Image (cartoon, rainbow over all chains, first blue to last red; front, side, top):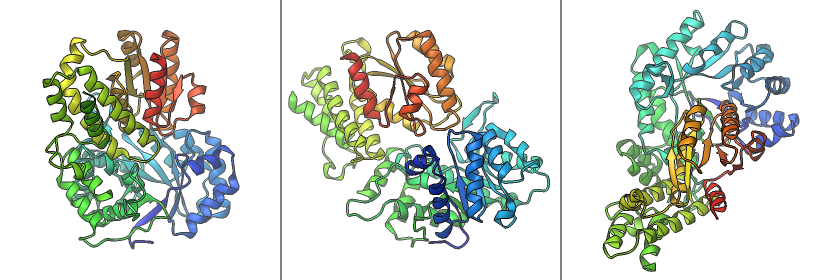
Length: 290
Length: 221
C-alpha cells in the first residue's frame, strides 16, 4: 500500500466526508477515535483533522481525544486561524514522539496564521494556488509561472516568519484539481509547477504535497467493465509526479497507491491529457472511464 | 419537427457537440447539435422548438446526474453541446423573439475562488430555459445587491466551497433579503446543508443542479 518515499496524511477525519460529518454532528468521539485508529493501523503517517464549520473548542476536543489513543502526529486542517489555534494549543508533541503537527494550510490570504508559530510550533502546508494580485486582492493562479511565483514568495515569507526553519519542515501544495473537469489546463499547470520547483535548488528538501483525492473527485468509482477508475488515475499521477519531487499526499488509507508501468491505460490517459486542450481533455478522460 | 427536437435533445443528453467531435464514440462522424440546429432553423423549425429540445436534453442530463448515473465530465460535454445550439439561438434570444422563463443571477461568495459548482449549476439552469447572469467568483455582497437591482424579478444563486466563506454567504443572503425581501435566494456548495440554508434565511438548498432548476420551475409555474 505504501510507496517508498511517499508520506501519507490520512484524510478521513474531515467534515466533508458524509460518514465523518455524521460522527461530528452526534459528537461521537468513540467513532472518531476508531476512525483515527483504523487509519493509523493502515499505514497513515499523519492523521488529518478537519472539523469544518464548528467551534474552536470542538477542534480542541477532537485533537485531545485522538491523542489519548493515537501516537501519530496530527495535521490540523482549517483555514480559520481561531480553529487552528485551538487545535495547536492542545496538541501534545510528547504524545507523538516529539513531532510537530502539520498546519494545513497557510495561503497568501491568511499569512497571520504564522503568528501562531511562536507559541505552538508546526510544519506548515504552504498553499501556492492563490496569490496576491496587483491591487493586493487574492487571485487564483492560472499558470505554472504564477503558481511557482507564489510558491517562492510564500516560502520566503515562511523563512522570515519561522527563523532558521529547515527545508524539510516546510510543505508546498501547488494545488490539484479534478481531472474530470479540467478543460483549462490545470493538470498541466500543476505538473509544470512541480518541474519548476524540482529544477530550483532553493526548493531542495522542501516537501511537496497535494490533496490527491481531489484529482478524481466527481468521477465514477468504476469503469463500464467494473474495474476501478480512481485508484489507477491517482497512481498514474503519483508515477508522473514523484520523479518531479512530490513526496507527500493528503489521501486515503483505503487506496492502493502504486507506481504504474508506462504502458498502463491510466498512464496513457494522463500523458495524453497533458498534451490536449479544452474539452479534448474531458473526452480523453471519458474514453478512459468508458 | 418533433423529430428535430428529439435529435437535439439526444445530442445534448449524450454530449454530441458537432460532426467533428469524436465523443460519444458511437456517434462519430454523425451530425452533432451544431449541424442539426443550423439545419433546423434553415428548414423553418422555430427557435422556440430548438430551445425546447435543449431543455429536454438538459433535463435528462440533470436527472441522471442527480441519480449518479452520469458524472461531471458528461455534464460538461452536454453543456458544450447545448452551447452549440445556443450559438444559433443567440440572435433570437437577443431580439426577444424567444422568451425565457426568468432571470437567474449566480456567483461564488466573497473570499471564495471556486467556480466549478457554480458553473455546473449555471449551465443546468441555462438549459432549463432561464437567462443566467454569471457574476463570477469572489462576489461581494454589494455586487450581488447591485445586480439584483438591475434585474427586477430575478432569483439569486450563491455558491461556497469553503467552510470559512460560508460566513460570507450568511451576510450576503441577509443583506439581499433586507433590501429585496421578495427575491428568492438559492444556496449550494459542498459544505452547505439544508440546515445551514434555513439558519441563514435562504429560500432553497439543493445538493445537485437539477434541484435548483426544479425549484425555479415551480416559482414560475
